[in-house]
Structures are given as C-alpha cells and as structure tokens.
Image 1 (cartoon, rainbow, N blue to C red):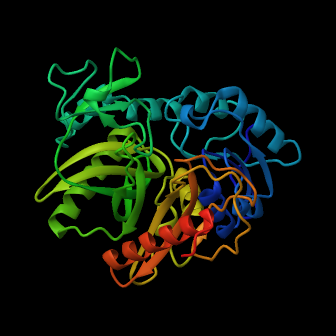
Image 2: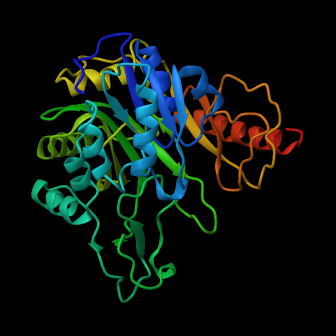
Length: 378
C-alpha cells in the first residue's frame, strides 16, 4: 500500500528502539502516532494512539520479523500515511527496504543508510570532500593502544571500546584511531540537495568500566568559535549533497581547537530531538516536510540553553516504585516494572542561562532520580 502525502491529523507509523521523542514531536505537529518500540514507557503509551511492544534483544537491535508483525498490527485499524523510523535499524538497513515495499518511508532509504554506516564508503567520501576522518582499519592494529573498536551500524556509544579489549576476528567490528577533541553534534534537515542546520550540541558520555563511551546526554548550544561553526556547517552541506540525505539527520564530530574530524552520520532522527524542538511547530512535522522537499526558512528556540541526560540504573531495580514524576522527566517506566543494571531508567531535562548551567542541573536531576528509584532520600 502506498498512501498519499500526509497532512495534519494523519496517522503515522513510528518504529524505533525508543519511540517516545518521535511520538511527542508528532503529536505537537498534528500527527497521530502509531508506535512500536522496546520500552512502552508511560509517556509513550499516553502519546500513542496505538502501541505494540517490540520483542527482541535490545543489544542486538530491531529484528525483521518482530517489527513487521508489530507494524502490521498497528496498521489493522488505521490507514497510516507511512512510516518514520528512529534508531535501531543501522545494523540491518535491509529491513528498511522491506518496510518501504509495504509503507511509504519518510526518511533515508536502505541504500543510503548502508552507505553511511560503511566505514570504507564514508572514509572514501570524506577524502573526496576534504572532510577529516580518523584513520581506520578492518583488521586489529598490531599496536592497538590508541585505537578504538567499533561495531558497524552501532549507535549510542555502548558499542565503542578500546581496541586492546577485543580478542579474535569479528565480522562487524572495525577499528578507528583515537583523535583528540570534544564531541559536538550537528542536527540538520535535508532535502537531498541542501541542508538546513538546526544547531550544534555538546555531548558527553556516561561511562562504566565495561562501556567507557556510553552516551550520557547533550546540551545546546555547543560552545563553538564562529569559524569552526562555519567549517562544520560546510561539511554538513557537502555530505548532504553527496549522499542525497533527506529529513532529520545528525553528524557527530570531534573538535580540537581549530581542527575537527567527522566520526559518523546518523541518518535518522536521534537523541537530541527534544532539546532542539522549536517554539513553534515541531521537528517531526519539519522532517515530514523535508522528505517532500521543503526546508524551513527560520526556527525560533526558547531563550537560554537546554540539556537532556539519560539516567541509567546503577543496580537492578526489581520493582520501580510509584513515583510522581516531575515534568522535567521523560521515558518514564511503568510502576512495578523491572529495570536491569545498566539499562535506561528515564531521561531528564534542564534549562539554564548557558550550557554549563543547564548541564549541571541535568546532572543534579539525574542523581535525584537515581535516589528516588532506589528508595534513598534525595
């Protein structure tokens, strides 16, 4: 089935590891979200017109049969205009081709995702476009110190580890030389030819001994010199045209003084969606418009800075207590659900006059939630 172009109040399928942010932005943009994800958090269930929980292993990503069954169930009582996907398909982009044969796909197609997540193709493209990209290798370097091991199609930083920790050949692993710098993300809309940069965010990790690069959160705006902002924006423009990117995308860089390196492109809406929501309209609606070739003229954001941070359970939580969740939290688990150590518990937000203040408040709120969830006094 191929639906006509959507308008407001159109039902839209959403598939992702976590679909809450997309569902919230879709509601704000006037769409009716039909969601499948791994969590089924309280706010996702509230936002979704229909929801089906995805079966499968969170660490392995979204599986073909599970997501097809879930989407077919969601489509039974609706006529969805199409599907928008989030994280979870990078390791298996062929699933996107299967989905596109059944529903209209609003976002980058399977071939584009496969290209973007192939280090050989991406590094070669960066060389052609004069965009710095770290040295990489499919085989483990003889002297692995100073190298990282990454999983092709990995997302969220949990798949990244020092190269010396990897033993034996693994098909999905590639190696990337470490480079200095601070992580900066660029969020942008694209229409296959042009990019409309929405802004830059500074990002940080939430490390554990086993997962030293696990994604922790982000704050906008990132502190960038105007000259560096121009360099990164120009790189995004060239990548968009070369790859024919469409809709919401993000690019992850490391910035070190006057130097930068591209680390990866995320060819779908990602973790910074919430902190870049504009005062008027929604990024979801802008994603849909960009897929139709329309980019926004200007965007207005709330004054000051905004941060978001992932709260990971430090220990097993056999039964999440009944909590009166404050409005600065999202992705709230159902009461009495079980959360294993290391799994996401929720997301916290914070505003501040500047980025450091917003991040400090987010860190404080993260500690408060951990205290509540464990029964400690905050």
